[in-house]
Length: 299
Image 1 (cartoon, rainbow, N blue to C red):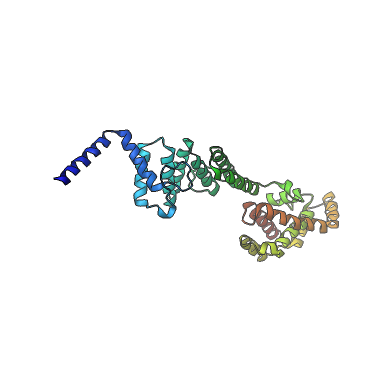
Image 2: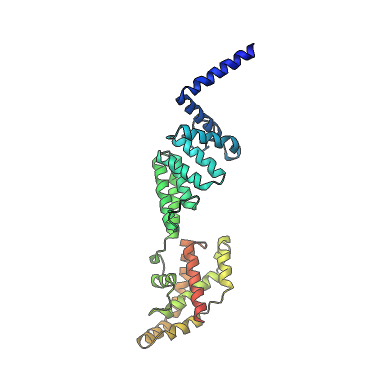
């Protein structure tokens, strides 16, 4: 009889909850909180659950229900986004983080920024250029910091460095004209073609022979590519000379007189290139590829 009484009381309690949508929504939110509260979320309302402690089979349906019943809860949307991310469902994670951010949930801004920074789960209309994605990431990190999330401030500094690395600015180099011409792929088709060829020679030689680059694991694929490709400055010079005539030939002759200086600038700018853009930057790869391609097409 006692068990039957308990069952009736339990059913009565359930009926009361079902009759009160607000209470039902609150309970759904509490279940999601209990199963998916992020350790670094200052807005969490339950004990932290580490990534290793998350039980997707329980947490995911609980948080999907919480979002359904609490559609304006930034916390619920963020926690659902976290679960999608752990399940490698990145587009859904991005959508959930974006919705959470639209409700000014501080940590969500950081996670939207991370998605732009890493290029993960982004919509088709998102920028394809790294520098543009990094700028969007920075904007979200700044919003996160302004909303009081401490990690947002450190992320702003990281994004600034990546923006700097992904933005090609010739004025940072010893020879802005030469590095721009190489970047654009037309460095043997200008009045300074001979100087540019010697500059390219110095740049490639520095990359190929410097211990600084060999010791950097990220540089190894690029250095291997350089070391297994013949970059013949004499071939480039002959090709450049073939494009010159009259006044241009005189300019080329003058260029030979300062060839050592041009080569030295190339060596110094190889170091600048690695310090600013690193080995795995699309900018560095483009510059190296253009030198190799031009050398091969000149032969």
